[in-house]
Image (cartoon, rainbow, N blue to C red; front, side, top):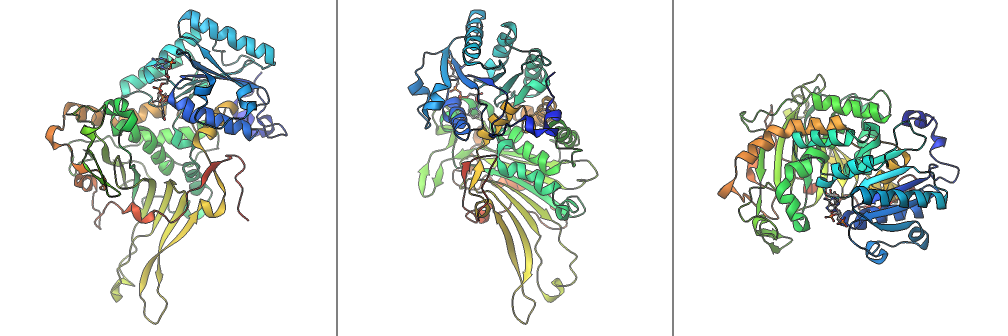
Length: 524
Ligand SMILES: NC(=O)c1ccc[n+]([C@@H]2O[C@H](COP(=O)([O-])OP(=O)(O)OC[C@H]3O[C@@H](n4cnc5c(N)ncnc54)[C@H](OP(=O)(O)O)[C@@H]3O)[C@@H](O)[C@H]2O)c1
């Protein structure tokens, strides 16, 4: 009888043999093998995993697509060894019963000839309208092993996972009619980032911080994601989706869950995901009538980035000239539970801003104005800054005394830069692909998580869809910090609150190269 993941985590030697490879043979079947994601991210990630000897000793990759393709085109965006090319083949087929029969016959032939146990990892790197169709075709074609079968099968699903609560629920129903929940791995590649995973370690491995991680000490939290890029070659998709769906519903809500969840009872996948779900259930529903507003949207107009003039969103290729799609969102979230009562969480994300970066900043309450304030000093808040990308770092902002006779105070920062301590960081797709091969779903999103975050944002999505912005857009210039209206979602407490100047945290650390996720090399 195959072991469950929890049983395996108790006996880690089952995962890796003594060469550091995972032990289960498998066939990695990538649908959309002719597409951009497969060529740019998935094949290079698999190439690196093979190079690092982290894939099973016996495995093959079948890239599946309907178009005729040559290996030289498929493998044009990475450096691949002969060994990798020997493990790789392209199969041109469609998703009709005959097409799936062709795939099944090819998979069985490869397994038989190469002595590979028929464990199947299916990866849906196709547009979302194809997810249910391909899952159903696999089920009908007899390629989905039952969960208790001797060999496993798993389905990895890319983002976007639905476009609203109705479509996400329908997609869950469709996939769950073909696979059981434990076989479904919903990707959110932010969860594959080292600095995002470190949020859990920081919180639950350091007593000094966990004790103050609550409304008694924390004033507010800002989670921010800024991009320099516009819609670019994702224009068709982005103009339909908008930024709330593209960034907030998934990536920023995942970061938010990790910052706010309660300690899990264990590090098993379900224990962690249960706690993430609990905090999503405690979110105060968005009240769109309240003032100041809980959310604002923006769209960029012409401007300049690094002194270079750039056009506005509506002028980009593939964007509707009267588009009301938001390219910027700022939102205030509240959690109605014991830990977080009264603490506002501000999430902000935008395209074509003046800088690139993802940060979480936890701002602590000020101390009573008794001691140093009476000497004319103004005490600032202590802050913990988590830099997620492009640099990875944790900074602690403190107040310290300037040397000398008087009590002059300064703000200083204790910086932990990953690049000072490690030579490498894990590439998110490498980490997630390896976890899917290993059968560890911890860094993938469970069905109830995705439905809860869609449900939470649904009133806002519907309200914005019903109220086109017309000539109120554009409302910020490319290269700026976003629309002035973003300040409107901030609720002053005893002290005024501002969006932080995240640029001041740039260049504190060097970015580090993606590398081996399992054996980062500490610097001497
Ligand atoms: N590209 C990225 O960086 C990126 C990042 C995050 C998430 N994603 C997600 O990953 C998925 C793939 O993205 P992509 O950029 O690789 O897309 P893509 O290049 O447009 O398409 C991938 C491939 O899917 C196949 N395909 C198209 N429509 C299909 C359908 N209805 N049913 C089955 N197969 C279909 C096509 O191959 P054939 O015509 O040969 O079958 C196409 O080459 C999407 O869901 C996307 O949102 C992509």
